[in-house]
Amino acid sequence: MKTFNSSKEKWGQKNVVDNVGIEDFVKLIKDCKYLFSDSHHGICFGLIYHKNFICIANKSRGYTRFESLFNLLKIRNHMVDNAREIIGNDILLENIDYKSVDTILEEEKKSSLEWLTTVLNKEKKENESKNTLLVKTLNKLHRLERENKKLKEI
Image 1: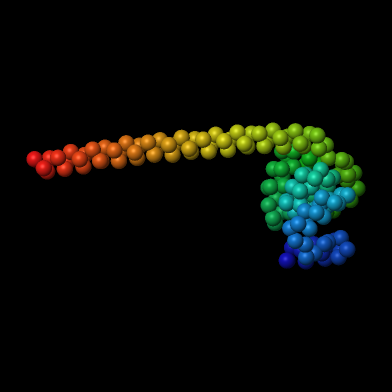
Image 2: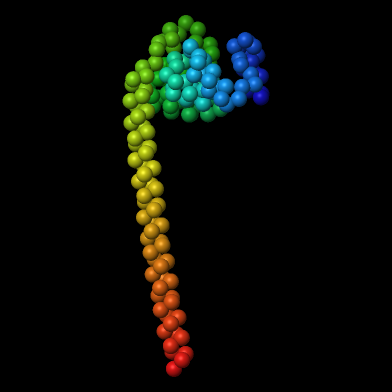
């Protein structure tokens, strides 16, 4: 709760909601008019629910995740490295172009699904090859055992 306590002190008690379970966390984001967050998951839910937001990229909790996501979606202008950058920065208040964001996300989902399907099918084929080799080896072993048994009978 160290992070929560420092956020509560920084932003004031009325602006920070505490003791929130997962369901309430998601619902608060879904129902908000504007999202202000330093949480990667909070921002991801903001994207899912098409919320306009300002993100303070948290350097102590996965800054590169923020940077990668915002650069990929071409929304870097909605991310700041510290709260002081918000003051007087009207670009942050521009609406997010969710048509563009959704197009990029759909392309990424498609690409990811293709990659996953390829990898899983490759693994399946490799497993089939291994199984085929195992069956052939076992059949050969049984044949050798039968031949050995016949030789012993002679």
